Image 1: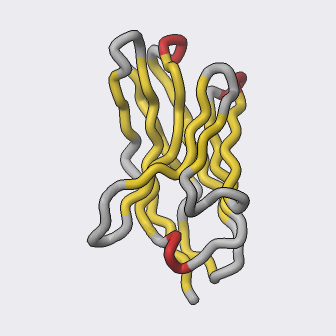
Image 2: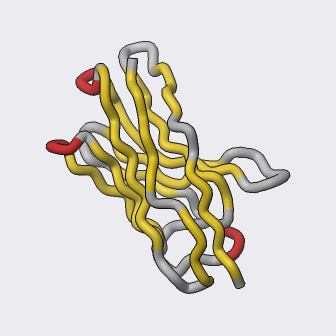
Image 3: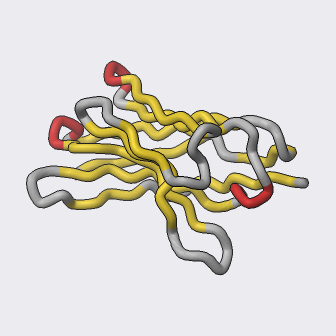
Length: 117
């Protein structure tokens, strides 16, 4: 099993920046990829960014060029640097880990990001 703990959410003005962190613990050696998803009120969950064990990244169209996902293997932590934030980025952001050969999903508890206009 994998346990994920997010931090770094908060309130920021439009145009500002935030950095989210997701620390993984447990059976981390079987993690295939980690990433961030978000859910805004009344909307479906959407992909923000992922990074796999090879370092390949993938971004949702709405955040390309503004958000950057990275990882620190020594700390078992994935980061999401969010720049040029917009009010439409307001959502609960969830850390995700894809685990093992059966590609099981583990989720963090979520962290609120609110961008004021």
